[in-house]
Length: 213
Length: 124
Image (tube, rainbow over all chains, first blue to last red; front, top):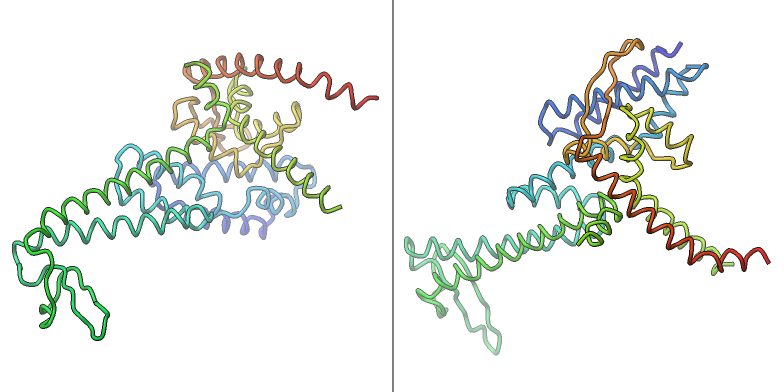
């Protein structure tokens, strides 16, 4: 019978892993997907005459790793929302997931983290400067014989021998650098998302769009 | 030997790209005559067109097409004892398939023309 106990257990374990990996999606969508995959597994296993545990195993093997299956859904969902909202948080979540799947994703993640870190430091310096003017700045310290050490940002106590370079200019400078880094990083990530969605939907529709214009 | 295997690898990679490129088109076209559930769609593509689609690719694709408004999904209680999720084309989906089909006709006609001497050479 196809309601063999061990294959039933195997199916439930697969669906459980799938559900866990889908948790970034809204709950109703998760249930809908799990329900559909369950229905698929029952049908795949049930239509063969033998109907023993092998059919369930085979059907599960053909679906592939539950985490990989889930990530296809999750990346599509995040890509759509990230494109609509341009939210850096969503973009970062998307590239983190992408980085687990490809080298291109790792590169994008490193650049994204770097870009947003620069934005955060720049904007942070500019915003905090008016409140603690003595402790925000860019210090340069001469280290004999001919080396220099730089320190940027907020310090507990200004280094005694160091010379502060920026003064109040850190506010406009921080705002400009921060805003540029933020915009550039977001644009870069959105371009990646567009490319991802284009390749996901197949080259034919791309060719179609350009042939119509 | 190694040159040959790298060449067949390149051809294989090309085949994967072509399949990937037409997948959405094929799925939409397969839904033209009426609603289908996932496994029916998989069997239809396997049987009638040698277009075997990996299950792990088809289900996320159907979901994407639904979000995109090309297909609509509905749960239907079956005699099998468990409900099945059926997909059908929306008006937008139907329009898109027609556009794609027209493009495809012109595209393949052009390729066929280019291929005439290639395939004639091989027979000799």
